[in-house]
Image (cartoon, rainbow, N blue to C red):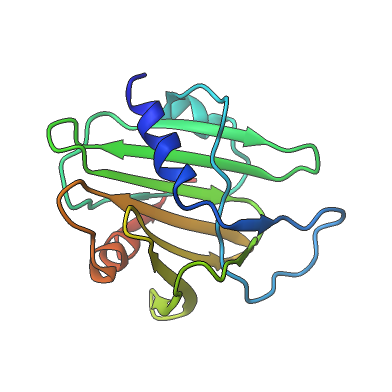
Length: 173
């Protein structure tokens, strides 16, 4: 798919150091979710990807644009950690939103960009980052890490837009 290189390029521009805890699953702690990009993974239809995931997934019921058909990527790590990436793109304007969900809370370690602390849904502490290329909103809920990444060519999305996407996430499984 032609949009795959765009997604990889966006992620290469903002990848912070991420450490996934290995070994037995521990009780969730108040950390901030940031997932790694799915390098070398082929996209697939969303319905197919959802069948391969064994944890809750939330999908947006509202986006700031009308997207083409979403496509997804699933990463399975040897320690049982799974991540699904769901990409929404407006082919006309090149606006991009990705929802990534991991079945394990992950911690963001980054001194490169200023983190703005936010509250999602009135109860989850999260962070917003704008690196000038992409805007990211991430949080942990119910032992799951969720991150919304958005970008558009003309100007950055404000934190309010990503919070609005988060407010319109609906659990599908």
